[in-house]
Image 1 (cartoon, rainbow, N blue to C red):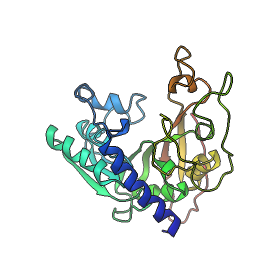
Image 2 (image 1 turned 180 degrees about the vertical axis):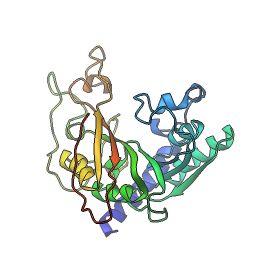
Image 3 (image 1 turned 135 degrees about the horizontal axis):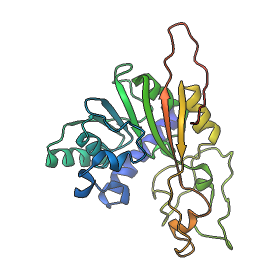
Image 4 (image 1 turned 90 degrees about the vertical axis):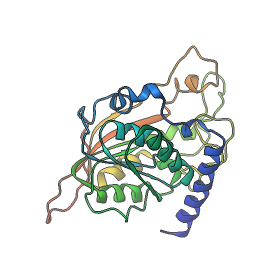
Length: 270
């Protein structure tokens, strides 16, 4: 790992530990009602086929007491990876309170060397690729630990949302950050689209989608979760979402590549 990536990871490790201490919204564990039908809560689109019992599930960059415990409650054999020790502690607390079994591993999402090749049937990756400078390195690691034919569900911050101002300019929101930028985004305060204190990086569509294909995945579906509400005040998270979708959610499958067959990029939206 190069020096700049290592420095970014260490910065974000400390940032997320602080966000846990302050009770930031993504550090709040799953609620009692979420466990009544846990798979429906985390997989409302049915991308995982309605049953994950006895499947090996990697929840990547997913600490915080929500993703891992819900997938474990749905019957998966769950391993949670996160760079923040405090975020992983939330998972351990929830698992202990609810009698769930899951493993936690403290590492960055672009270093999964502690796992065996093709160890997992499913990789679940909630919004977190924005915290690493090189998303292609993450995809390569995921491809290595996911079995051929395995499902990779990831969610990312939409590039235009990271470009757009938090507050409106006239009727809409100005694209204030360049698309082809280098380095982390400027610091932000008081935004529901960004996390204060963390280093975030804008990844272009060719990096998010093309990089996934080049790493050996076929994309099977793509959705933009709906957060827009034109009735909310100007500047509100839901008002801004009327102009630019904050997130994109992608279902991909690990290609079954023969020993002598070179990997080729693939894109199939169906």
